Amino acid sequence: MVHKKNITGIILAGGKSSRMGTDKGFILLNNKPFVQYSIDALKPLVSEIIIVSDNGNYDVFGLKRISDLTKNAGPVAGICSGLEASITENNLILSCDIPLISSDLLKQLINAIDDTSEIIQIESNGKTMPLIALYKKQVKSVFNDFLKADERRLRIAIKGCRTKNIIVDKTHESCTKNVNTKNELKAIKDAYNH
Image (tube, rainbow, N blue to C red):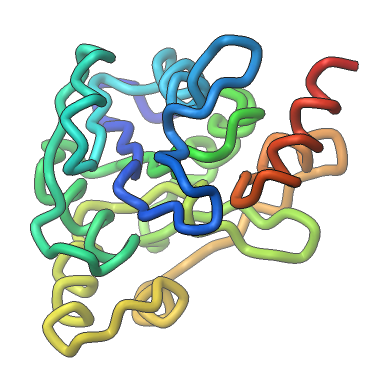
């Protein structure tokens, strides 16, 4: 397994959260903000955690926070900014709205590192999850080119890279659930408390 000193954790917390109406990273589940779950899952596996967000409230977590280099350009820009700030070749990138995420799941990404894949992403329920993924630092230049061409769709940018998907087994599928709406939040709260 690649040593943690060679891996940076990057949490994207710059989304507008228009469907939720509030900054998702600070939504509480069992009195713990969503972003803390991403931090806790990354901590044992990485040498540094970077939060990509223009919101200064994230400084309360005591981690390095950087602003998006390209404003309002979505996750492609957030990933680009995070990779720019990272000093390691391997980078675990997570969104801040996956409160059931686990270190075990992230270990599967690290174990899959090879010499050819530039992005290793989780596939759950037949869907790829580019915001639960490991990105090599060199992807930054590809993403930068897409941004310059005003292409902001993450799935298109990923197609420009060499990718590998790690299909998670049924037991880990719940770890990958992200929360975009109040109904999804309620469902996760109900599941978490049972």
